[in-house]
Image (cartoon, rainbow, N blue to C red; front, side, top):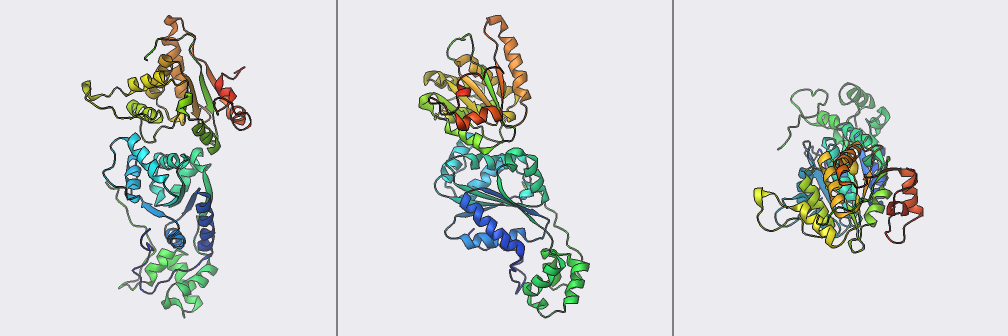
Length: 425
């Protein structure tokens, strides 16, 4: 933040009052920044959340690079990318394709530690939160993220295990109690400094109701008596090789609680020279071509192919298939597999058939219905070719992921259970 973005700055002689909530927020924010973690501050409108966070973050500058993002509508992942591009003051024009955009943002975020303040986070949906999670999970980025918003922010984060499990600290802002009102309001503005405590109590019980924003409106000179605060209405703004019987199995890792250590383990296994690729799909995209671009980026190859192609369709999947065969790649780990559409899942199964890779799908939900149904279709489609049906290994997280930590494979840095199907399942 380059300027003090405090609320009520247009109220003459108003002061920032150090309440218990602000002191707690100062300690929590400092711990979050040191840990490079994510934090959620939530509560009703006018309770002083944004004021407290801005005050605390201003105390960390200039040693900490703090960037503020505010959303006024329900943004998509694309809109989040553009907001981050603007907040980081990146030069040039924003990339058009998600895979290029993600690579640019991750490169910029890896340069030095940064703290993002995401204000009005109640406007974010699961897809937007997922994109922040996607950037934060990247090992090279050094991010601390502070979400500040209404109760809707808390509801969305709590509803998504992959998000709530990554929140380091939760802090709930509430109304000022009657005793806190008597302590804070005389310090808030000189007009209340010598006021009778009974008058302050009367004004709070009939108009302000422990709400700092309502107290600001009550303090501001008005030609008429103000009523209780109503939040303003916001308007949204605008293969290359033949088939290989038997085909390698499909291993499904069930990470039902979406622990971040599992994501880090999969990302650490990425090593193209050894034939291991970890695919972390960009959030907010569902097209098959977008997934192929992500795969090409994971292969460290240019996602956008030069030249013109019939119908305007780039042969991205053909290029990915060729590179996987040529390198060669023997194991492909796909994160966030529970978000795969049926068409994307079929593309991955076809890629596995053409290249002979061992496909490992990491599902961060208790079930993976899409891939299960697609595997049955894939099995039926290949019965006439006398190839072995795909094996779906639905390995429980507490079995497979325990081996991730305790029994790392010497050759693949992933797990011994991922090097071959888990027996008896």
